[in-house]
Image (cartoon, rainbow, N blue to C red):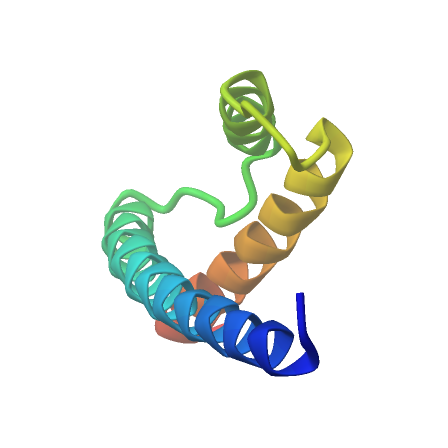
Length: 96
């Protein structure tokens, strides 16, 4: 592969990454809208934001259905961060 071919291949790969990133962003925002709805429901019935057992269910779901190449540990870390941000959204919407 020549330098020019490598540059073109890299540009194509980067464009594909940009497109995937936008799809991920759309899904994260869709997930967050659902989290907001859950927060409203929890607020109505006075339930806590933090539910460790539910988080464990999410981790089991995503790690158990992970075909790779990401490791289960990497997937868990990504979802820990997603859940942490979701909890922040719920706290903001629920006033604290």
